[in-house]
Image (cartoon, rainbow, N blue to C red; front, side, top):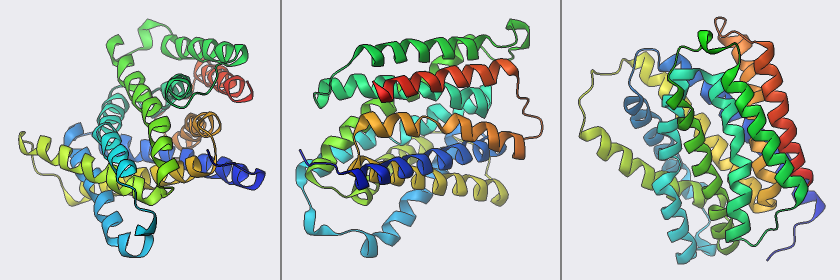
Length: 292
């Protein structure tokens, strides 16, 4: 395993935080675009847009010198679930629950990432990390119960949507990390994964009939795709330079950026003390996981 020096670890942290900010911005744009459109129509625009841009950039950004067939197969296998699985689940949870709560529940990702990293990469779980996981779960419970049941206008089962997305992210991060150890190219990992996801989403889209998407809505979803692709690329670049235990918790801070963007861009998105407390508790759990 390659040694990660202090400079690379610092870069990994900044790249992970930049990824979190782009994820949050994409959540807000998704909320704006999904007011009238079905989820699959949005995904069928955003994911292929990002893939097209990547292929256009490939002659300049992709270095084939480090090509590794096993790594490519790993990236392709990850592409079956990510970004397409997370995109569909995140879009639907965003549409039903809003970006603040949907994004906050994504803080479960470090828990799953650490568990899968322990199995796949041999990382050890320590008592502080277990405590951090319990704190994260407590924060999520508080988020889901904020304001009492009378203020909830979405079905309780919808909680499983962002949780399932967090599970997929938790699987993908150590999986991609394993592939990057063989071919340390964040661009290659993004390109292969997005290409596989594009094939899947276009196949799904062809089986369904939806009203045509206006150019304004299409432009919104295209911008979402660009932001998500940038976030994924930054996360993969961070994984090249840092461990899963560092990258996963920092990427999971995107609910904090979501709250800020919500306040600025979604005037109707109300911020409740319970929501803020729930995010604070959840992020505290992330810190415990990180420092443990």
